[in-house]
Image 1: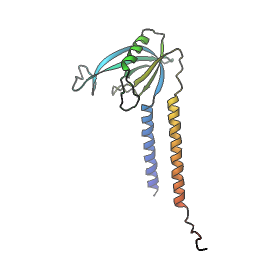
Image 2 (image 1 turned 180 degrees about the vertical axis):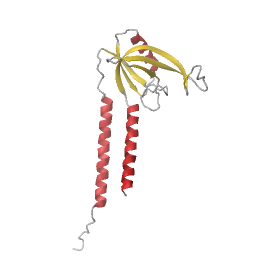
Image 3 (image 1 turned 45 degrees about the vertical axis):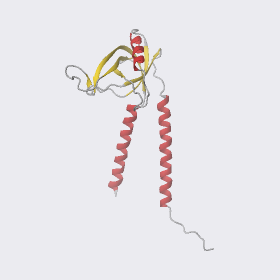
Length: 185
């Protein structure tokens, strides 16, 4: 029977790890950056179309925003700027062209800082770029407090604790010995 408990613990660990990775990928994050440039690339399902990757299906134009972080390490990151539309993840972003114009304007002034809100990861080997969902000018180098993430995880914690308490109560009721009722009197 110990192998059953161990198997359940491993399965729970796997589920929690996958959920944490999904939350980290899809929930919004913020970064204060200098925008150094913008560009548009033609892409298909396999990535950027070039000599090594010719177009072999439907294509689309994808906006990219080149940035340098505002902190001491000056990390260079390229972000994708694509509409999410009505699909998942539900950011309902339809203004990628407007954000691109804003980014192009911010790139002209080297001292202009911008706060970007984005989701996703950057993997060079897979040509994956995080997607920008919002862009605003700022004068502060500090990142804004993640209000949405705080509310989301608070609600998630309340739901998890509530479910845990309900399950615990039901298990206690099943384990409690049945006391015969004294209905003979």
